[in-house]
Image (cartoon, rainbow, N blue to C red; front, side, top):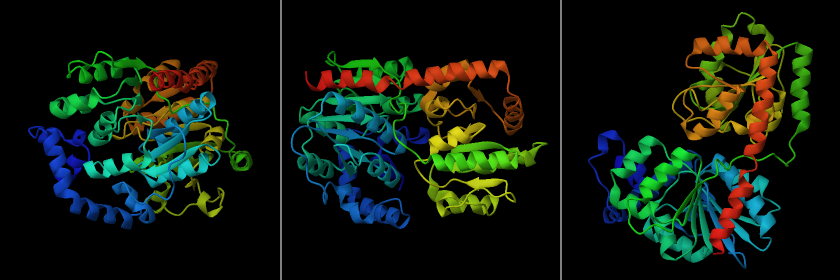
Length: 447
């Protein structure tokens, strides 16, 4: 299974395995040899409900239910929910500028597929699951869909998907691109693969100046890439939402808080262990009875796990609302974060208290709700930096400081109000990035 992880993504080679240098030949050979094991691995994932069994053939570049649309087809590769948001933001702006284009979005998770189905019903968008990076499976995919251009979102860099697209002489773009410092070092320890991969795109839209430098260094491992452009545009996950959401749910939460005379603490986009950490911290507050703690896990399928840890609580997925005899509420549905952000008095942003790298802070900042995060924010470091400086976000490094910070934030001051206004303005400006990125993308595709 360790070799399977390396084949799935050479960037996953950890410190203890750095002596193993992957060449393109070895990479392809591993995929061919391990193909039967990979098929078995996918069936395990089906049983874990991490794969759609009715669409599993798409992982092998076959069995598509949709046909290729006529005309120009732009392929955007997104991994999970966060990257899907960036992809949809780009599609929205690109569609405004090029009304005859069609878009294919590939994802790696069921959650992302459901998000696209829900949010792209009236857009010229087709969804497919990403083919795994076996050379034949990628070839089948490209032969079937025949994209006119490819845009890879964030940091999901698959060697065959990138290089086979490049071989077809298609405009190739990395957008909203970022790579951690440790991942960069691992790529540099596999120079034969890194050289070929990172010199392939014609345009890289990086999230910040540090990322720009990383990509320039990785692309610089190959000579003759002077035509490649690396431009800083920031994360593309953000936009001022024009979609509707269940305002009745938001109002019901606000009404409950009013009647119960309590404040709402929202534990948003939480991961494993974070719900327990936050619950224990809140339980130690002297005025704990004055809070309703809402959990909105990043992956709603973890609902049973959370209830097992913290006990029975009302659940949104069952049509329930908070109850006076229970200080917890589980919002285990998708697509309702805006209403939750609006209803909350304070947001504790998950994915930041252990090693997940932190979730996008722009969307909650738009609502003007004060935010607390942990120390693990490397995935959105640039956005966190400016929002921390503005003061709308407070960062903590322990459960003790988390409790203290909750109390401090709820004692609203003029300084906090100014920080919130400044943070909202920064977030609104960040939402204009997809427009700028779209102009660069169109220019590259139509060159």
